[in-house]
Amino acid sequence: MTLLAVRNLAKAFGGNEVVAGISFDVAIGEIVALIGPNGAGKSTCFNMLNGQIRPDRGAILLDGTDIAAWSPDRICRIGVGRGFQIAATFGSLTVRDNVRTALIARHRAMWRCFRSASNMFTAEAGALLDRVGLSRVADQSCSTLAYGDLKRLELALALSNQPRLLLMDEPTAGMTRADRSAVMDLMLALTRETQCAVLFTEHDTDAVFRTADRVLVMDKGTMIAEGVPAAIRSNPAVRAAYLGC
Image 1 (cartoon, rainbow, N blue to C red):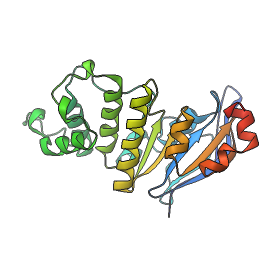
Image 2 (image 1 turned 180 degrees about the horizontal axis):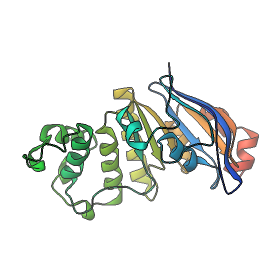
Image 3 (image 1 turned 120 degrees about the horizontal axis):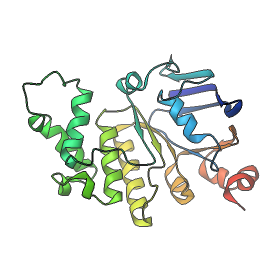
């Protein structure tokens, strides 16, 4: 069943059409990679999907509802999670308190000002940290974490909203090869467990072809190919535009 349906999505900046009328679907529980050279329009596409940028035209249908004009917080509340190229965490807080903060936002519990935040959602935060393998550093400041653990924490923060769709923009950027493999395996296991759909961008083609059920390829704002990893790897247009062979 289709969860996300993108139809004729377009965005221009200063007369330059960065995304030029692309269309694609993502099914429930499916892991889809969006790849392409730098400047292809991938990040702009992601920013439209979660409401940071409003498209010039086109539709973004989540379960049949067009969310193209919605704000990021409204889109988040209906179950769309987002991860960024640079991990976005509160460096002065502990790992556990970062997750608590995300849970407070999800439960709209900011009004409970008579309670200490350090006493809220302890069990739920602990369960999320267990799932991403961060229980060992739960009381450690985020500012002291290794980069691989920061990306694991970002995944926990995204999962705290119990998303139906997870948008991950270069989830392994800046990692060692070992960390890249570990984080992609974790994302794969968690999405299979929860049936959350995932759309991710990634420059590590090994990770893409090993993890994705299906691959979309953009170049110069247009969608030039889509299919299973084996077909994309051998596609002449993709090899010429992106794979460099």
